[in-house]
Image (tube, rainbow, N blue to C red; front, side, top):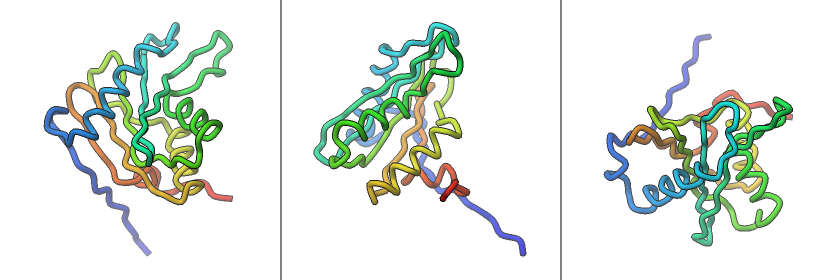
Length: 151
């Protein structure tokens, strides 16, 4: 039996066209790029999440001399959130990069962890992927990984 998967998402040709709350989250992710440690790839990634309380938290990628000991911005943010304030659930998460020639999309490991967080907090959240002056938004992380790993 043939089946198909479709993906609904919102695209903004300009970040300036985004709703204020989403634009602020992208700007926070862009600022987080400045904290990245990207000594080897020179590809700085920042992530920012808005929590239910309205607070915005950030993370950035960290590379290590002992490859592959580094960590992506999204997982840096998500693991810190779990360790510090997991009761204040994530409602939206934005990703940005520098240099920013195109939108920045999460890697496969990050997609799985994003889905894990949605399951754990029992609340889906928007994922905003920005770069090159544009952005694409999905309503939940599981949209980015329709065939998730599950125990």
